Image 1 (cartoon, helix red, strand yellow):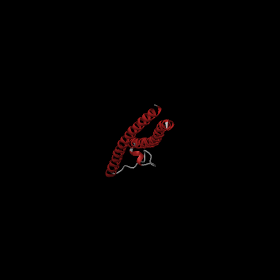
Image 2 (image 1 turned 60 degrees about the vertical axis):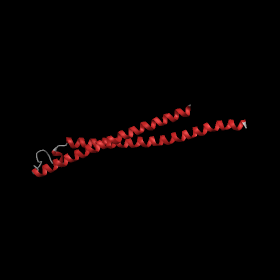
Image 3 (image 1 turned 90 degrees about the vertical axis):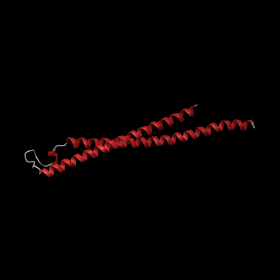
Image 4 (image 1 turned 120 degrees about the vertical axis):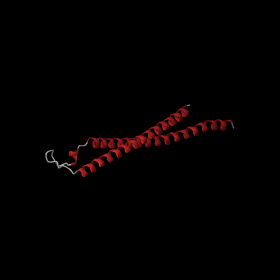
Length: 128
């Protein structure tokens, strides 16, 4: 009977340890997913940031790729205003996309920190 009690006392902490290890493994998988999402979001952010920068820095001559400065046709006023509005709309869309991606990245970063804290707590409770 004493042997059975001693075995139970030894097995119960091991089952708790196994459960903690399982939780840690699941949290690490979730952490890896969040880190991959954050990396993809960051890459999208950088690409859109570059598109926005190019759009803002672009010159009207860039709209005529085969033209030289001397033979650039003078666009009609309506055409020029339409292109200018399209450029403005693209810059605004890029800005909105950058804001959305930044918000997403911050949310993923908060989730990552929360997961890391949970993993650390489980590892400490397992070590005790």
